[in-house]
Image 1 (cartoon, rainbow, N blue to C red):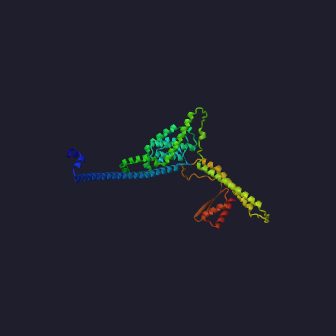
Image 2: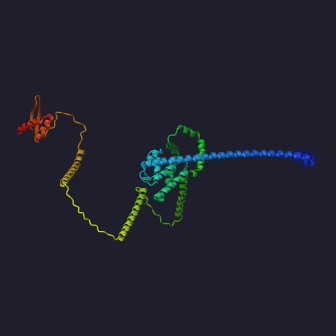
Image 3: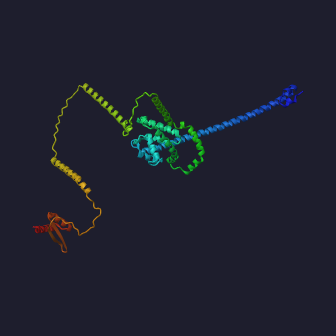
Length: 451
């Protein structure tokens, strides 16, 4: 008998045992064929879904890689522009690779960071002078500090670590001991400046790149969300994009470890009684001597030393050659030079001495009279012209004669004491166009009157 319950629940073993062989094979083949086809279809659908997901993932990875590459290149371009602008501005105001406070304020004004003598400029100058009231700061140190503070991709903690590292490097370069510097005050300044520069960063970047158009601003507003995602990716890959900061960061770790070891050694060894007090005068760097000038002087000294050695070697070689040379001729100068006296030598010397004396008198006159002329009161208001006020001539009048030049023309000639008659007659003849005969007659007439 066939168990109907087993057939309903799918147990076909009893059914196959009780049926004939032909029917059993047909039923079993149909069941296996339907089962394999369903499994095959499911496997194909599953493989298609896996391939689709893999393609979507590859496309997403490719898009992210392109975005990271574009962001990296744009970040390099912006950083290069930032460094170029800071460098150009510093070069306009530097004097022997140094900046004083006034020129540093002008740099901040040109960069659009702050106005003169405000809190930002004062705090930043304290940080640049390391709190030691120095008169100037080195241009390289100023450049590194400004680049770190104006870098948009750095967080506050990263900026403080980089600033600390740059300050430690500057202390080593200037041979300033750590005990002289107040690091607590510098840390407060760094914390305060990084907070202030966060607000100045966007405005500075827009101003430094030039006036942006309205289309760019609208495009930036519509892509705020995508920029936020890109910034997260850039923060995750900051160590790859800014390699120069990594070197400073690693170096700062080494310096901090050395400082920590020194402090622990001093605390662990209380018996060490030698604690020297270093004065600031011993640690001040000679700011007036430039590094390049010092290197140039050293190079010049080395060059002179080499030249001296070369000259000594050449002289020794010549002496050796002279010792080896047996031919030593005696030169006899038979020519006798005879110097002929220069014609008019005494007159030329006398004229030169007289000219030198006149020049000396002229210089002495200007030296004595120039102060008197400068101290003389100048008339600012001109006096009115008046013909009635004549300046009297100090010479006494000897002769005053009216002379008829022509029928209807008369002229008066005046001769005063000390006047030359011939000069007076020549001037009168030139003024009235007299010929030589008339001049002779006039001369005879005047001589008769005078005598």
